Structure formats: C-alpha cells, structure tokens
Amino acid sequence: MARKPVRGDHESSRAHFLEEARVAETLKKGSRVTGAAREELAADLKRKYESGASIRALAEETGRSYGFVHRMLRESEVNLRGRGGATRGKKSAAS
Image (cartoon, rainbow, N blue to C red; front, side):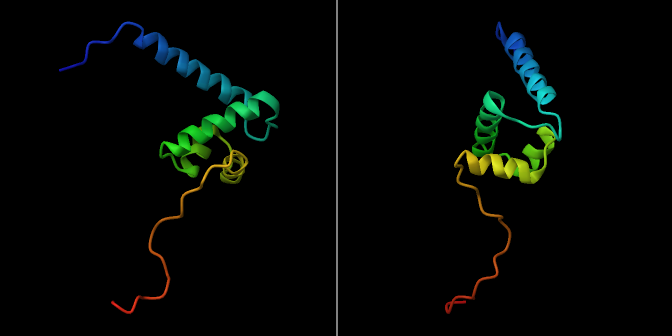
C-alpha cells in the first residue's frame, strides 16, 4: 500500500534536489572550491560520510576525485574508517 504523501513532502524534496544541483553546478570537476562553497561542501561530505557513504560514492556523486574528497574529509577532521576486508596481521596463538 502506497504511503499518502505528507503535505510539503514534494516541496522539500524538490528544494533538496535543486540545492544539490546548484552545488554540483558550482563545483564542476577541476574548478577551485573556496570560501563558503568549500565549507558548505565539506560539511555536506562530512555528514554523508558519517552516515555511511563511502569516499568513492561521494567522489562519484560530486564529480570530484577520490583524493579531493579524502582531503576535504581530513580538513573537516573526520575520523576516517578503515579500509575493511581481510587483515594480514600475525595469527594469534589460539588459532
């Protein structure tokens, strides 16, 4: 059964979409990001990364490089997650 839209849902999602489009337009790949736009982008990347998005996903979403997104997160003092996957440490004596 479909959820009945709450009044204002459409407007808020449209406003969010337009804001994302505006940010993407001003942050074309290769363009410098400075001042308020940089702070806004850093805050947005930090929020999304801390909500579980990967650096690669954020890079693809913003059209920027992995290194750029990584640098922005480091500048925002985000605690970066580990790479994940298998680790190659010494086997414990219990194994």
